[in-house]
Amino acid sequence: MGSPMFELMRHDVTFPLYVEVDEIYNLACPASPIHYQHDPVQTTKTSVHGAINMLGLAKRVGARILQASTSEVYGDPVVHPQTEDYWGHVNPIGFRSCYDEGKRCAETLFFDYRRQHDLGIKVMRIFNTYGPRMHAHDGRVVSNFVVQALRGEPITIYGDGRQTRSFCYVDDLVDAMVRLMGTPHEVTGPINVGNPNEFTMLTLAETVLEITGSSSDLVFKDLPHDDPQQRRPDITLARESLGWQPTVELEEGLRRTVEYFARTLPARA
Ligand SMILES: O=C(O)[C@H]1O[C@H](OP(=O)(O)OP(=O)(O)OC[C@H]2O[C@@H](n3ccc(=O)[nH]c3=O)[C@H](O)[C@@H]2O)[C@H](O)[C@@H](O)[C@@H]1O
Image (cartoon, rainbow, N blue to C red):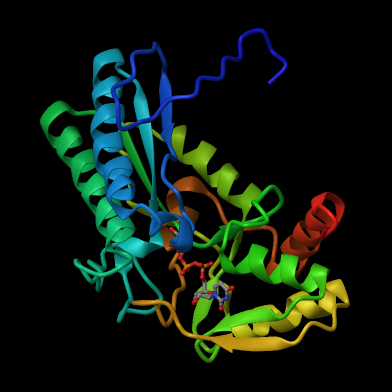
């Protein structure tokens, strides 16, 4: 970031952008369910208008473009683990739909730009990524549990805590992203990127308590609408076409995340 070649621009992707670039990583969109449901219309606009604007930019300047898609395109999956050819089980009119359907429509746009304009597209379906530099109020499960444990506050388990997720450490994700961008034109994805080790939210809570040495209690809260019961990526395609697999397992990734929050969390007033 200290390089004189580096330029940071603050821009809302729902408006067109005119810059000269070779590669575009389109990561724009709130990712935490509580944040993306706060202004759902804007969430859909960010995914759909944002994709149109970034694809238009890629077409104009001949750039390659990578879309941060999501495991949420599979909805509450009935196929397990999820492979890229599974079309998903998504509620089109629910509270999560702004995100799920927005990201699904963005994928449609990417593939239509490919078919109509032969654009260099790369679509990556990201599964539950976490790590240092998450916001303390992000609202997703890993940062919630870590912050609660460090503060000695109750750990909020939604539902009975037996739903599962497969957590990917951020450095592994970034590595896969850069590899995907560097693949030949014929590699478009969609391609799952995540860590296939699957845990219940109860196990996650116990692991966080163990690592932090916290004595926080567990409290059980209502399960959010349409919360997927199970999620685990099949990453055969990522292994084959990117030569990639995750290297940081949950316990190590949590240790690094705990260390980050322990260092940066402001003391409670
Ligand atoms: O990363 C993904 O693959 C996608 O899934 C996430 O959705 P979700 O898996 O529901 O993410 P969390 O909010 O972290 O929740 C994970 C599980 O933990 C539970 N949870 C969450 C927070 C909490 O305090 N307690 C708790 O038990 C949720 O109910 C859910 O079952 C987000 O929608 C996106 O960031 C993303 O695209």
